[in-house]
Length: 82
Image (cartoon, rainbow, N blue to C red):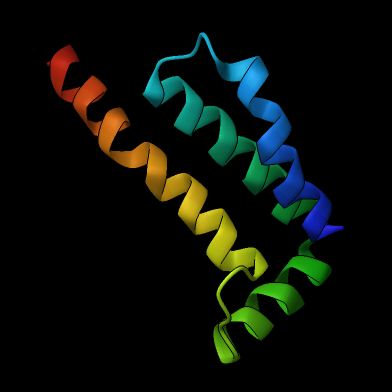
């Protein structure tokens, strides 16, 4: 279930191509949080397992890698708005 959500990030690129970095970060963050709240028991187990025994490529590290990749451009977008 969680692997499926992580894989959805790959498919979202096409949908979000026209988004600004900030819009993309907001969209992906909301999608992730929606999933975590809808499936809180599974999410909690997965996140706790990943935190106790972190591995490269686990669900949490993949999610963070994808979100962190969007942060610098999103921050620049926010700075330009001010």
